[in-house]
Structures are given as C-alpha cells and as structure tokens.
Length: 362
Image 1 (cartoon, rainbow, N blue to C red):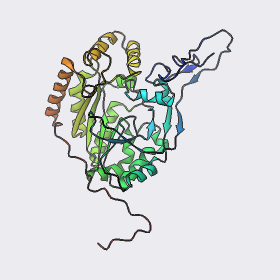
Image 2 (image 1 turned 120 degrees about the vertical axis):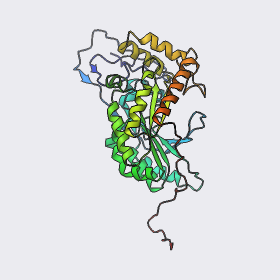
Image 3 (image 1 turned 180 degrees about the vertical axis):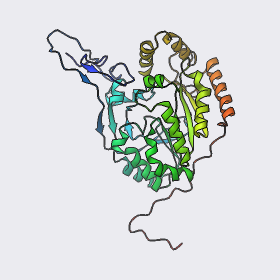
Image 4 (image 1 turned 30 degrees about the vertical axis):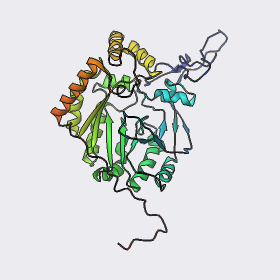
C-alpha cells in the first residue's frame, strides 16, 4: 500500500485534531494515494501522535514590511502548531518544509532550542535598532510542546535581561508559567499579551481548536496575567461570519470582566490550502449550515474564499464586514475597551552586564 497523504491509512486513528486529511503540499510534484490491492496484511490500529524534530536556528528575528501589521519583526520558537486550529492561516507555511498543511502541520512540529542565544547576538549588534518584537504571530509559542522544550522561555529570558519590548499572542495558558518574567516586564511597560478567544462555546472550540485551552480557561489566564501587572488585549480572532460573529458582545464582556484592557478583531482568513480544509470541516461538523457559512465568508472577501489584498485581508469588505466592524466598535465602547494602549517602552533597552565588565561609579 502506498503512503497516503489525501487521507490517512485505515489503521491510523485520529483524536483531537483539526484537519480532516493530510493533503500533499503544493510544492510536491507527486500526490500519493493509498490503494488497497488486496495483498496487504491487516495492521494493528495505532493513534496518530505528535512528532517533534529539533532545528538548530541560524537566525531568530524575521522582518516584514506589511502595511497590515503593527510590528516589523517577530520570533518563531516553533514551526507548526499542535493546537490544530482548523482555520489557522499559518498552515500553508508547512508546505515550505515539504510537509502537509493538513495533519502534518499539527502533528509534525519543529522546535528551535538555542534560539535565545541567537536572538541575544542579533539584538546585541551595534547596528540594531530596538522596536517591539512580536511573538505568536505565526504559530503559538505556548503550544503544548513548550512545556517540554522551553524555547519560548529562552526567548523571554533574553528579552527580560535586555529590557527589550515584546508583544505576545497566544491561546496557550502555559503563558502563566512565565509570570515571573512577564509580570515585571508588564509593570515596566515592556510587555503585553494578546489572548485569542474565538468562541465562548466549549463544544465549538473543542472542534475548531482541538488542543487549545477551553474558552473559560483562557479567560482565567487573562485574569492571572492582569493580576500580575501584564496588560492584556482580548483578540476576537478570527471572526467567522455566520458562525461566531454573533458572539462579539459576549466575548468582549467576559474578557473585560476578566481584566482585559484592550480588544481587537480579525476576519477569518483562508489562504491557499486552508480554504478547502475549512470547507471540509464545515461539511463534516456543520453540514446543515456549511453552504450558508461559506457564502457569508465569500461575501466578505469580494466573492472569493479569500482576498489577500493589503487593507482587505484582515477585515474583509462589503456590508457584512462593515456591520461586524461597527458592532465591535460599539461593544468596545460599552465595555471601556476602546482606549488605545500606550506604546511599549524602548528607552529601557540596554546591554546586560557581562562577567568582567567594569562596574559603574554612578
């Protein structure tokens, strides 16, 4: 039997995963399909488990010039994400690794231990100009494997020592582990955290984001971060028109009660392989509503599954996009979440003391 990418081999069981298949990456020249020719012996059933490889990083900082993003640099401690959010816009990046954006993205991960030392060299260069580093903009730095590998902890320790500003985005409650670093940084104006809440429905969240923390647990993380002095922004991201947009007011109210001080939203984005993956999920999980939801998604993206045009990709366009934006604005005003956050401080950035340095007289 040939190795199968478009669907799993029959003896493999899938539990708590977002993608429904493992379609071949777009850069592969061949598509492999399993065909039972009657000669194979039955194999024992086995569970599809997460595999993690280690990469020795040669660089830490990634720079971008996107006019849609409020930052120009980021760090990615991991490639792939075990949270398995079926809608994740980062899934297509796995094709660059000759892996599938489907189940490979959430089961065949790459950890980058040692990235902290590389980051220290990069921000310590004489030509380096300090600006906030964004973490969690591609894949989540606090996904489950962080408990074992501690790559995000490495990065945060470096940023703390250098008093470097950082903005973190996550669904992972493992962020609470790093309150000893994030608390003082937050109080000094050096750190803030964005907690993504897509829905308050635990059943829907379990299906959409199978290995992410439950909504109530994320709200509890907002409270713990806030109590430690870390400013928290609730991110209603993505808003899935026709499915989760009705929860805008409730999410913002619950997040405000938990201590969030700001809010943002992003429209569902379905680049490349994510569009068919989302369609398959809707047809399998919500067959009676799938066509209507996809029609609404196309309405906010100019009649297509996705429009990658700068200025449109994060918000969409048309009537439904405008309605969601206005509802969000009014809900933020009611909850007091429409206050702009102050910029993260850059003036505290300084090279930490090294062994052998001459002590200052003042």
